[in-house]
Amino acid sequence: MSLKKICLWVTLVMVVVALVALPALAQGAKAPAKKEVAKAEKAAPAEKAAAKAKTEAQTPPQKGMVWVNTDSKVYHKEGSRFYGKTKVGKWMTEEEAKKAGFKEAAAAGAKKGAAPKKEAAAKPAAVKKEAKKP
Image (tube, rainbow, N blue to C red):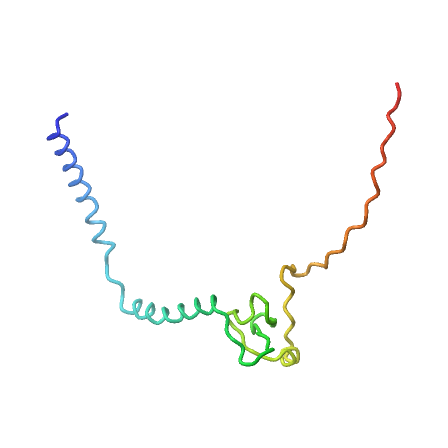
């Protein structure tokens, strides 16, 4: 096949693809409604603030305060991975948190409802069975 024929075939294929794709693109490119644009603009700052709150821990107003998660009714002490980081919460003293009915968060790595691990008792050495003689 000559180079001229290859160029003609490539051009023909490109024209066919363009004729098929253009109407589909024109239908899908409608402008969004004004209400949808307004909702997206209002939601954007809230989403940015939520993302920032997830990544940055808040600083307590006084030293020794705990972070209270008001949704889960649990408080986190300094050093906890959730200290000042949960979406919904506030700062309190530990005494205030206990009086308000909040519970201390479980230690890191502890499973909810799991009993503390006990050390395994020493197992007796296996007794070798004597081989039976034929």
